[in-house]
Length: 156
Image (cartoon, rainbow, N blue to C red):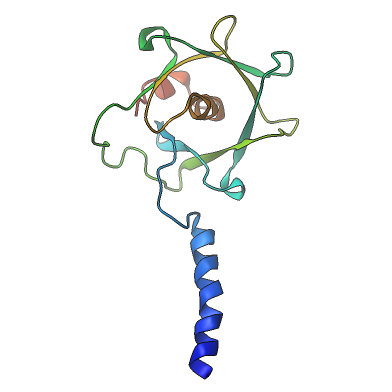
């Protein structure tokens, strides 16, 4: 009976340890290498140091991101048609900044408007199995305080 009580008390502790680590199951989260660290979409809302949201109303947007048809005309391109990942290219570390995508932004959080034409703060090109256009836009806007030359050089 005592063994059963000990076992029953350790299961919640094991679950809490997995959640505190940040992941219950290993999965790939969209990530870009930027400078000496990386910027990654957070697995859980409490992991994120920064948040972004999206809008369909261009008047509510604080950042406009245009989706372009070619990598040459983009400020930021995500192309991952390789079968193998570059080892260590985007591993989580102390220098990793996590970005959360929310449905309602705080007054200081960027609100992104995605479009195919018109004025834009950033132009992105995405051809990926693991990134969506929204993921790429969130990462580029979330990494806005990193010099653009370093961000544009990171293609995963």
